[in-house]
Image 1 (tube, rainbow, N blue to C red):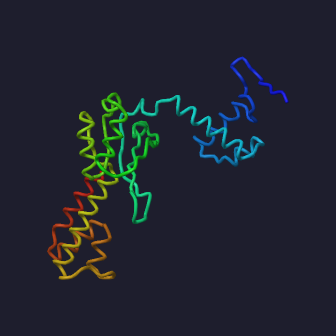
Image 2: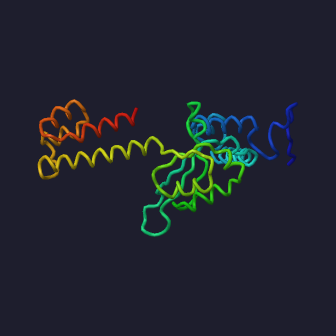
Length: 235
């Protein structure tokens, strides 16, 4: 059986021995990658099988990734850990690195890489593998309060500004607020708070006016100041 390749001025319409044209594969790849469409929906539109389109889209995507530099325009990165295994054996954590550069333009961040382990060495090894040009180009690195990230960033990204991301800032502030709330509860009543109790409900209501009114009566002045500090951080 003879095989034919149709051609157009811009090049071949399809590769040899394929069921789909390059235009069809490019369309499906854009739909899947940029619009979160499913392979099944694209296959129904093109009138082909799921397996044929899946193979073509994956091959086209891998070709684009191999020809492009995903780290070329990265100037801001974020690092955090993720627990991907909940068993007792084996390494349960992976280090997740994301590109925060698009956030400056209001676009969503994108995943750069995931490496096994949760340590300063795991992050440092990843940075070293990217090369000196990449490390010199990074201006900001966002992280949580884990000392391992800070150690790796201080050693490998000497010119980058280290910041704690907003989620962990709020998390740390809320934790300190809870500590003050618990201490004020114990000092005022001699025990921990109980649901339905007026003091406990006021402490948990997060309304500063109620805090000031009630704490002025019980003589606990520390919590309103702590809440005001949290409010300034959130602003």
